[in-house]
Structure formats: structure tokens, C-alpha cells
Amino acid sequence: MVEALPRCGVAADEIVAAVRDPDKASDMATKRVQVREADYDRPETLARPFAGADKLLLIPSAAIGRQRRASQLGTASSTRQS
Image 1 (cartoon, rainbow, N blue to C red):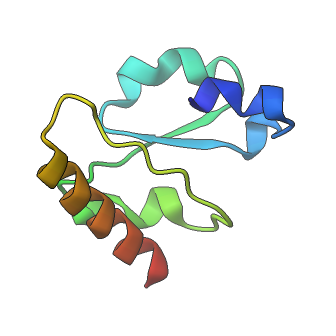
Image 2 (image 1 turned 180 degrees about the vertical axis):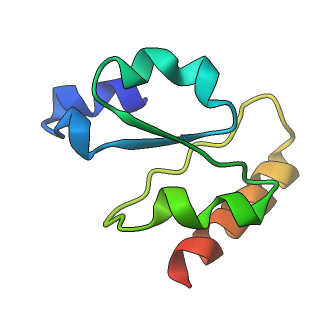
Image 3 (image 1 turned 90 degrees about the vertical axis):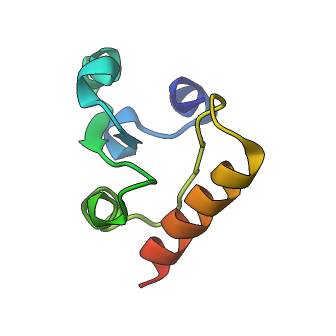
């Protein structure tokens, strides 16, 4: 999903990918996308990656249950609003 944003006209250097494990997203960093650590289950990790954002595209892991994804997205959304 993140990889599609530049094809939609978003400059790669304006994209921040907030990921649990930045090492696993190193391929995005080589494409000028900023990669920052963030974990929906650890709210204390969310403020820095979201700082300065005008828009958020929240994509939860497909590997977890629906109820947990809803909880994680709620946590992420409330972090951004504060």
C-alpha cells in the first residue's frame, strides 16, 4: 500500500512508514520513504512517527483478529488527535 503512494503523486520523501520493525522495512528507506518505529500495541511509540503528519493511512496487520485491529486503530487515531 505504501509503495503505491508515489504512483498516486505523493513524493516519497513526504511519506513516513510507521512500522513495528524498521529493519524489515529497509527496502522502503532505500526509496526515500522515512521509516519510523511504531507499534499499535505500545501507544508510547506512536507520537514521534505521527508528529507533523497532515494525513494518516492506518493499515493494521492482517495477521491479527478483527477486534484487536479495531482496538489498535482506535489507539493510533487517539494518539494522533492529542
